[in-house]
Image (cartoon, rainbow, N blue to C red; front, side):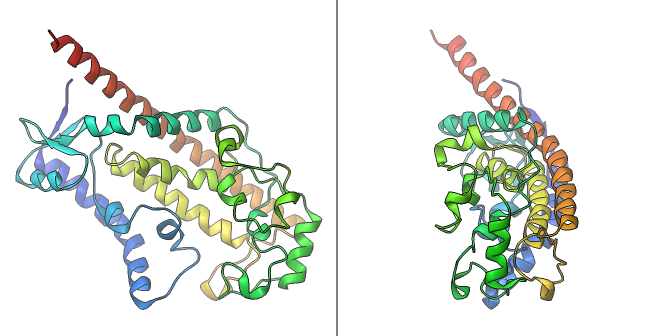
Length: 302
């Protein structure tokens, strides 16, 4: 197979640009962690998702590229790389070990993209996570509920729950789960997820980094950036009062608030669609590289 050979000055510039982009996201999180503090919005992409700050900071060119120069040797210390005659490259043998994940990600992205966006959930998943829950047991206990416990429960009872994302649904309280339009399970994921869901669109970050270092870091960072924005709206529409952190509420208990939420939801769905297409194209590219590697080996076999 043919590789894209990257001159050291070129790839070092891309690596530096990536680090400069992600550092303003990473540094405040690490400083809060060192002080034993948390932030329900800004920390989410680091605490909910499993990709560490150090891994997000590290730049990768993606499979099919060769890094040249002395600096490329450092990549041999990272999993998923090997030496080539011209330099260092991502090891497609290691990518082949992740073939089930690669195929699953492509299948899920394709299924989501095939469906129309549903925009009628109004972010009630966060409300369902505290429904009939004692105040001392809510997830973000440091922040008060805007409407109090009784008012929060009343909102849940006044509006149908239409969650389509299992990883949100699984955090519903026991009394809230039967109120959802569908009983979701992990096996329902590919059949249930749809492009209007804020959490499905945040999860583009998950699927991008799950395939690292074979996906380029620029794509991973683009998905992270969108996830950060979505999380802010997610929590502004939640039952929590985050005014002390500078977040104005989206009052989804009112008609105006629901309309505001839908506008944001539609914008995120459009932006996520473009990222989803890029990530799906990346999956196709990686599958093509694996096929080309297999064919090359077969041609060399006696």
